Image 1 (spheres, rainbow, N blue to C red):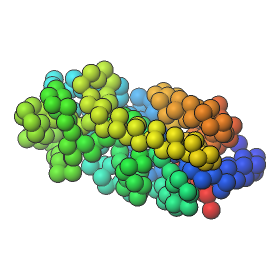
Image 2 (spheres, rainbow, N blue to C red; image 1 turned 30 degrees about the horizontal axis):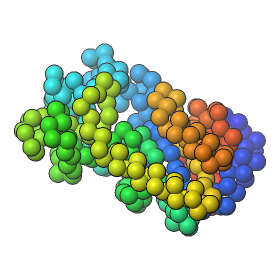
Image 3 (cartoon, rainbow, N blue to C red; image 1 turned 90 degrees about the horizontal axis):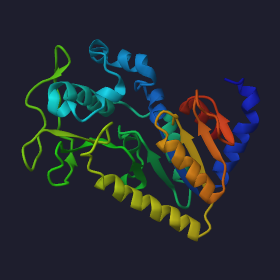
Length: 277
């Protein structure tokens, strides 16, 4: 990482862009949660450190995050997602979320969040549900493994106990409509049963927000946090919107800050401390 003094000009430029804007588009990937203490699944070793059972089984994240486990080994599937559900519930969003929220509340059009994270941390930090798009779904929402009726329901009453051997204790969550196994409404790898109506509705709100800003000549600022290249959905969205509004991208990422006009190679909390008062 470059010495802080070499980044002074970038900090000043980013700070000015955020101050001048009257709308804030915040895009975020998994790195956004690292400063809150959430595990970093970057690389197989990072994943295995968080989930030793996966290492024992020789499973990488992409293999574990597959809906087939809910049919082939539902106790293992719910141990994995149940642990994450309770972890995200117990996690306190870091100070960077609060800084972004305070800044958002000073803007005419406030902000909209586009995130690949399924942890619900932006809602927990106080951002409005109606101003968040979770492109990969949310662990706090459930669906049928067969998507029997295309319906979703809240996981707020779901409690998963994990037994020795990393197995979820019976009874496991079941579909409210047909009684089959339930699963989180998360887009997994090799997933053909994900119910996308919730994310589509969020997308429509995002499109409407963008259209309003464009029609009224609003000034948009875009800040991206912790979005890597392995699953480039967030980075691609950031790029698309910077091109649409012809504005610079503020990209915050300790390892992959490249390909942005304002690249800040550091974590979310450290970078936001420099660019938001």
